[in-house]
Image (tube, rainbow, N blue to C red; front, side):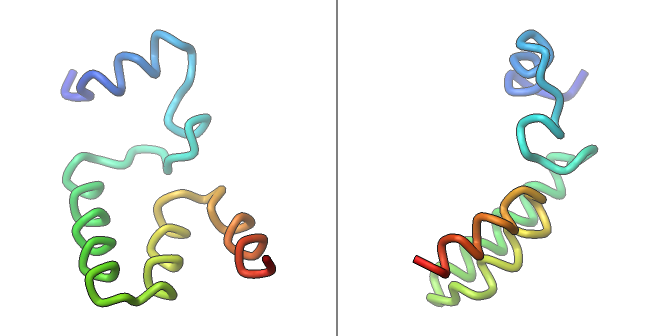
Length: 71
């Protein structure tokens, strides 16, 4: 159904996208866009923009950022 091997494994294990930490209904096209942005930010050495982008894609990442920044 266009979900690929990852989607099939997630369904088999009973985990949906939300349980894996990904936004619901994140299409492959959207995921590629986010990855491209993350790579560009990494190449530029812009950690703040990387954190902001990760917050958009992975909702559970937000609380982890404050914990990492506090360390």
